[in-house]
Structure formats: C-alpha cells, structure tokens
Image (cartoon, each protein chain N blue to C red):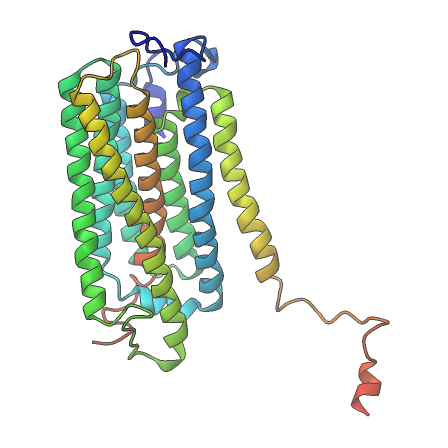
Length: 225
Length: 127
C-alpha cells in the first residue's frame, strides 16, 4: 500500500502523472463503452434503413414529452455533477455532498420516468417477445417490432448504466462523507463524473433517434388507438 | 459557441503542470443553457416535416451538444494531448464501425451484375 498520508500512490512520480493516468484509463474504458453503444446505434441505423416508414410510424407511439423531460433531468444532473467535481477540487466537502445528492436526485427522477414509460408500453402491448401486438398497417408490423426491440435494448442498457451509476454515486457520497477527498486527491469523484457525463451523452443521441422520428406526423399517425 | 471565449486566462497548451484550470460556474451555466436550448430546438425542428433533413438536423444538434459536454463537462478542452488522443481514437473507431457497415448496406442493392467469365452465359441460360 502507499504511504497513508500521501495522496500519490507509490508507483507514480507526481500527482499530475497519477491524475492523467486515471483520466486516460477512464477514457479507455469509455472507448469500449462508445463501441458497445456504437454497435447498437449501427444496428438501429441498418434496420431503420431497411424499414424507414415502420420506424417513423412506430416512433410516433413514443411520448416525446417524457423523453424530453428525461433529457432535461440528465442535463441538469450533469451540471450538478460538474459542480460536485469543482467543489471537491476546492476542498468544499459540504458542496461536494450537496451536489452529489442533487445528481443522484435527478438521476433517480430519470429512472422513475423511465419506469412509467416502460409500464405504459407494456400496457399498450409494445414489448417484442412478451406481448407485442401491432394493429397499424400490417406491412409495417415487422419493422415496428424491430423498432421497439431496439428501443427496449438501447434504453434498457442505458438505464442499466444509470442504475450502476447511482450505485457508484452512493459509494462516492459515502467516501466523500468520510472525508477521503481533498483538493490534492479527488480522482474517484472526477472519474465518476466522466462516467456520468458519458451516460448523459448516450441519451442525447437516443432521444431524437427514438422519440422524435414521428413527431411531425399528425397525432395518432400510426399503430393502434 | 460564444461562451468558448469567456474562459479564464489559462490555456490548455501548457500541456503539463496542472491537469486543468478552474472553470468558472458561469461557464458551466452557459453550457447548461446551450444544452437546454439545443434540446428545445431538437424538439421544435422534429415537429416540422423537413423531409430527408429531419434526422441530419437532429444529429447535428446532438453532435453539438455532445461536443459541449465532452469539451467542458469532461474537461477535454483543458486536457493534455495524450488524453485527447484516446478520446479522438475512440470516436475514430466508431466512425470505422459505421463506415464499413454502411459501405456494405448502402451498396448492396445497387451493385450491378458484373459479367464474368465464370458466370453462366445469360444468353445460353435463356435457351
């Protein structure tokens, strides 16, 4: 173990080197995450290319107000996260704890909205493999099912990242409460911030691609009801 | 974006010493405002029928929002070039993923039948 009183681990020369190593390591992890979600965005693009009309009509069954509200929740939680990091940088423990709590609050609100959206889709028989029923134009049924499959896969993986993020947030909050961070050493706070912003980043692309394709269609433009 | 010029005097070019300078709360709040405006504009443009341009417009706004988050919230504007190389590299491979996939899908149905010495003669085949 490193010297208990030094924030620099024994295998680093300087605190700057330690911090840059952590940053690069985190970005390498995020590179794998970018490609993980990137593969799903590619699948989305391929099937949308194959079923352009079905994707548009199926997307008009999404509630863009819920998606837009969640976009705002995530953006605000990203801002509270940067303020948490700068509080840590300035050694303000109270600010750090407060902004972390705010970040967790908005992240939780996101998941609550997502829960109600999923519940609504379940009751509307929109879930492929479980209860999918398409009462719109029959020739669009396969493409619409593919749209909802990708919707649940992509937003589900994103929501899983949110849940993991909230778990990490609790750990950061507890260690911050214990006073483990100082202006010299707050790498875990900053690296968690990178993860949190990445999850926000994914949503910024999911929102228009999943919720807004059919927003210009007349209300009830497709599907049932 | 306008707020890019309102940075503290410290510049990223010095490479080493401090990992990043303190970014003012005003900068973060300006980025927040830009992200909220971007979201509203995305919804507004999506409500209009722009034909083939709906998705390119939405993606352009999303890329702008993503750039703001990466540069300011994730501090890449103030990071070293070593870190930036990793960031650029990860998006480079994403472009490779999209590019190679669509060089296949976008050309599948348009590839003409290439006459070949080895393919059966179409005239003979018809007889």
